[in-house]
Every structure is written in C-alpha cells, then in structure tokens.
Length: 355
Ligand SMILES: Cc1cc2nc3c(=O)[nH]c(=O)nc-3n(C[C@H](O)[C@H](O)[C@H](O)COP(=O)(O)OP(=O)(O)OC[C@H]3O[C@@H](n4cnc5c(N)ncnc54)[C@H](O)[C@@H]3O)c2cc1C
Image 1 (cartoon, rainbow, N blue to C red):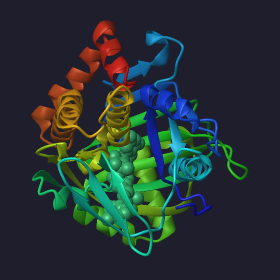
Image 2: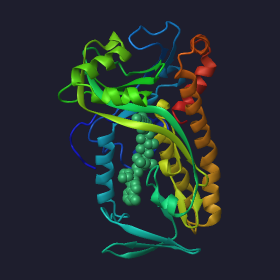
Image 3: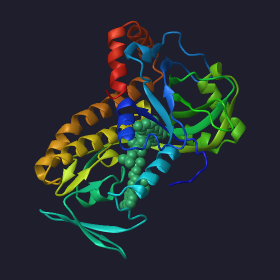
Image 4: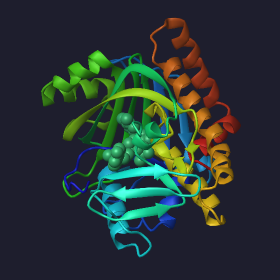
C-alpha cells in the first residue's frame, strides 16, 4: 500500500472531493503536490492524425478562480491515508486482518481471526467492485461489459502542460493526458489514460518501451514535444456495474462496492467520496447509525446521482468510441456548437467540479 516508487497512476480529483480530503486532514498530508487542472481541451480525431479543428475548450476562469480539479498521484493518497489512519485517536486499525461478519437486526458481529470479536451498529462495505460483503448480503449486481481495456502510464515531456488536460476522442476509445506536478527528476510530467479495444490494449502491453512510447505519441500528438515513458504501464479491463441496493441489514455499500463506471470522465473515486460525505452527514446526527431508515435515506441521496453518472459515461463512450463517419461529423459539429454556448459550458464545468 505504501510502495514508495513512482508508479504512474493518478486520480482526477474534483473540487468537492478536495474539500472532503482537506476537512479530513488528508490534503495537507499528501507527500507529493497535487497539480491543478486549469483548462480542459476536448478534441476528436484518429490515431496518428491531427485532431479535428472543431473542438471544445473549457477555461476554469469562466466559473471562478478555482481550478476544475487536481491530479494527484495514487501513491500520494495511499500514503496520506495510511498515515492518518495510524495516527487518528478515534480509529483502531486492524490490518492486515481477516474477518467474518454476521449481521442481525440490532447489530453486526465482526470476528477478527486471532483477534477481538467486535459488535457494531453498522458495517460499511468499501471493498470494491467484487465486494465480498455485498455478495454475502446477496445483493444482485447489473454489469455492463465494455470490449475495451484502459492503458495507464506516465510520461515526461519536453514542453510544459500549463495545467491543461486533454481528452482526445479516438475510434478505439478516449485518450486523456492529465497534467501532473513536477518531481525531482522531471520538470514536465503527465499521466496518460487511454482506452482501446481489449485485443489492441493487450498488444500494446507487450510492446517494448520505444514502440509503446511511439504508440502513445501517435495518440497524443506533438504539442508537448518529445516524450519519455516514466515508471511502468498498467492495463485494466473495463466494465460498468451497479448494485441493486446500497444497503442491507446493518450494512451500507460505498464507492465501487455499490457502483463502477467507465473511467472516461475520471469520476469513479469522486462518486465514492460523495457517498462517504452523504453517509457521514446522516450518521453525524443519528442515534442509530445503522437503522433501516437511515440506510434508506443514504440510498435515496446517492443512487440517482450515481446512476446518472453511470448513464452519462456509458453514453459518452458509445458516442465517441466509433468511427462511423456520420456520427463523427455530428459529434464534431456538436463539440463546436457547445463551444459557442457559454451557459451550457458553465453547467458542464460546475457538474464536473462536483459543485
Ligand atoms: C484506468 C482507470 C482510471 C481511473 N481514473 C480515475 C480518476 O481519474 N478519478 C476518479 O475519481 N476515479 C478514477 N477511476 C476510478 C477509481 O479507480 C475507482 O472508482 C476507485 O478506485 C474506487 O475506490 P474504492 O475504494 O471504492 O474501491 P477500490 O479502489 O477497488 O478499493 C477496494 C479495496 O478493498 C480491498 N478489498 C477487497 N476485498 C477485500 C476483502 N475481502 N478484505 C479486505 N480488503 C478487501 C481491495 O484490496 C482494495 O484495496 C479510474 C479507474 C480506472 C480503471
């Protein structure tokens, strides 16, 4: 969890999530500085060709002085979280540990192998897409498979990114270049996340460094100058999923245990943070933090927004991951049209910022 090497994975953190991390004392504990995203360019194109001149540009100054969000290294968040968990007087950390959980009407029993037996009013399942606790509770899941995989890496580049994030839509799937803060070795750094058909992504994963870097350059284009691959590359098979319910007796699902979405908009972790904010707010004023009415209120507060984001990211992916000439033409004009509608652009921007 605290592997110190730069591993190239990063999260786009929206303004609402930044506030949560700051209130929890995590933002100031990040060991590597976050990089503000000041502009987002959305372009459409084909691999190895210049993007269409019809594009969409978002400038954060249209909605205030705050950046759209920040790119933070995944390892920075893990290190900050672990530090805070160990030091917090209200938290007892039992990890690594194996537990078995039994849930009854009044409380849940948590029995730690070779450790204590605990009783709790509420168990929170934050154990990801393949949640064991969700399966144990028999909560069904709807899954949408994508025939795509995401390829993730980081690059050093010759020219500065100036805080601009690029979302470049290619027929195989979206390609994102996300600005990162400089480190001791590299002045200009970006995270790269792109999706392509699973077979192509598997082929890319096998390429040598020079050939892989050339493939990234073909998709990115020349605007950042020469690029060098930093750290390792990662491949993730993509799917979306949604749990039929966000709770069961004395159990709440949060984050990817409840919903998993396409990473096209970099919103998955942000949704999980919003779940945590909603659940914490309800628990804060409750006499019984695991009552059925509280858990129903939690689901009512979060499910519509999570489903809307799942649908939006799914539609975006379907609209842009196609080479159909008619659809390409329509979406290019769509991008250019939205670019000329300042009010609509402002609405997109505030939604992406999690305001
Ligand atoms: C390519 C890609 C790029 C992404 N980029 C972004 C982005 O820029 N911004 C963003 O907001 N989101 C992004 N996401 C989505 C984001 O990664 C997920 O939404 C987020 O990690 C979910 O967090 P989570 O804590 O709910 O689940 P997870 O990250 O899956 O964590 C669950 C944890 O539970 C542990 N666990 C599981 N089972 C058990 C068990 N039985 N016992 C003990 N522990 C267990 C796991 O080891 C894991 O540590 C991206 C996703 C992908 C694939």
